[in-house]
Image 1 (tube, rainbow, N blue to C red):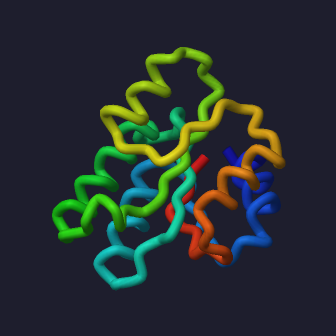
Image 2: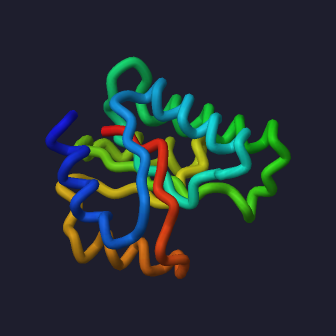
Length: 132
């Protein structure tokens, strides 16, 4: 939703440029376009619940696009998924079936978010294909 996108954009502004999408399908399309243009994103944020395509499906399609493009597992885009659902099934699916880098439960604390981002060691990022 608009408020979530705006809040995340503000929290992440110090990390670099970003692209903003409004739903899962648009996020996957933007991700594929960036990948095919040779300007793959360093980091993607997804919500589990999004319009037109949920985060699990978007994650699966993004990883499939990377594999089809010959991206090695160690070079995959870092994908962070946010969820308001406390159901452990969502977190397990994201890690073990989808290949998410980090799954965070909402509300996402700013310090936790920045701590996770700092572990990547690549600042600033090219953020992209983020949908909420």
